Amino acid sequence: MRVILAPMDGVLDGCMRDILTRSGAFDLCMTEFLRVTAQINPLKVFRRICPEMDKGWRTPSGTPVVLQILGSIPGAMAANAEIAVKLGAPGIDINFGCPSKSVTRKGCGAILLKEPRRIHDIVKAVRGVVPVGVSLSAKMRLGYDNTDLALENAAAIEEAGADFITVHARTRADAYSVPASWEWLARINEVSSIPIVANGDISSVEDYNRCISISGCKDVMIGRGAVSSPGLAGEIKASLAGLRPEKLAWDEIHAMITAMAEVRKGSYDDGHIGTRVKLWLVYLKKEYSEAGLCFQQVCRINEYSAMSPLPL
Ligand SMILES: Cc1cc2nc3c(=O)[nH]c(=O)nc-3n(C[C@H](O)[C@H](O)[C@H](O)COP(=O)(O)O)c2cc1C
Image 1 (cartoon, rainbow, N blue to C red):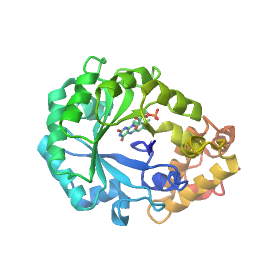
Image 2: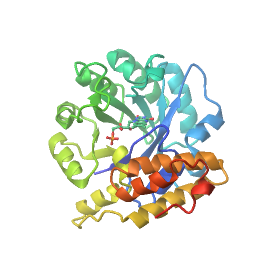
Image 3: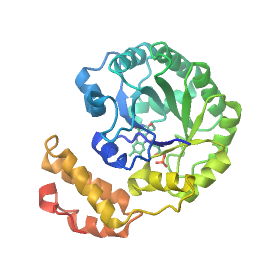
Image 4: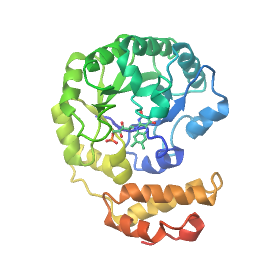
């Protein structure tokens, strides 16, 4: 029954992971992807992607942080994973889902879903340096243009030794234009011996219940839903414990945004903090009308200091 905080490049960095995991409701989170080319990344790049690495690879509230890597060269992926393992990473996740053209043009991310053999080789090479006890996982979409190779790709990942697979239940061609196909998760789950983590479109406790029941998966990963509804993982955990889930009130969300800005002070400039606050408000608008009003008042301001204290 794990609830995992999704990797979201440009959104869920170390500061956001800190804030969102304070509830204690997430069992695990993943970093934004670490891009792997032919070389080993310098230590400062590992640290930028995963600032938690100096704190035992846990968020300040204690949630383990797995490093996600993205690349296409098995040996280079393994070499970078090996560094992370030596530095104490509790797990490595491999990205086979990124749809971005800048990534797929270089033969990485979702385009690899056209080549189950290569996916197998990458996972196998990384497994070679990730010992038992350190989790190895992969995150895939259902395919690139279509779902023809979905089962083959999942089988390739399992056969190469991964401990679990997160499946974002859409193809790359779907982008976000169609609802996630939780039925497809059930098909993959049926033929896999390792856990399949369900991902895509879980934005309420009702979605969670439906997704679990349709897919047969025990674990879920939540991305956008956790950013727009920061209490969602807690609501899911409450409902699993037989309690009535309570949505966080706007003043609690407001305090989280302010805390997120405070966490950034000292490491980021005022303009960056302002941008991050506005970005979060855009996600929060979906669930909290107050966030929309707040955004309207600050959208033309660049510096956080000029928008602080944020309107309630
Ligand atoms: C802005 C953004 C950035 C993302 N970055 C990553 C990433 O770095 N690695 C990854 O595996 N998936 C990434 N994803 C995909 C999400 O992890 C997730 O699979 C997808 O959003 C579907 O789940 P959701 O409906 O819960 O958001 C990203 C998605 C978004 C919207």
